[in-house]
Image (tube, one colour):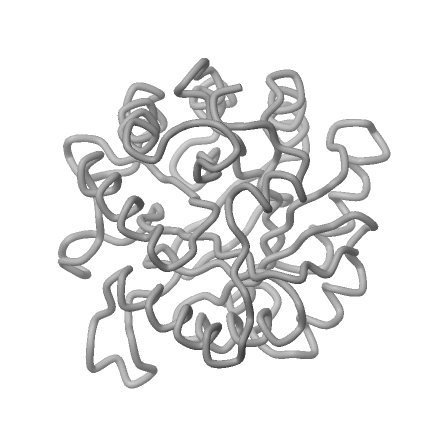
Length: 287
């Protein structure tokens, strides 16, 4: 397991669940997402976990929408090794057909994503399941490998990490690995240092990791990740509130500014996109 000497900040601006009724701060249209991603650069973000929404505001798998978002970001942010690392979602929350979930992997040239999410098992959320059969997971991993797109491995419990090792043995994923460790979901590993520690001990060699917390646990788990030498995942996808009392809705800027302030306070340097690309073996954007 690699212990990065600089903090990787993985920004999750939108997600599948938040709506305008829940919070006015959620970016939904391609223009809103592009603007908030570009603004996030000032806080040291190096990676962005993208979800697309249709004109009705609901999640969509359509590659045309992902293309608008990626092209809009790269038109301003640029290309090459200094460009933000962009990851697209292959989530199974709303649809489970491989053809739909893999459509965003078909983008090429300037629009080609650097990474794509790969959830390593099915997950039960509060009111919904994200169904990820072994067949679908392996099909997505195979497609990513064939297109040179690195998986953003999502693990909600220790069993998912074990499944990543299985995928490695089958030759479907290759090191260096990037893991998002997501704690605090009702049916998975709970957000405490014991569960995080167990998950860290099970990571395969050559793993780079970031930790996120669901809901009120986001800040706590981000701090644990920072203290223990990992990266963090932060944004409105996982948490809508600025305080545990839920008296103030957060904006993405609020969440990013707070975490960057903490990093600066403890003298923790933040990794650039170029540094993270080299750590993960990623080529420059669009290459």
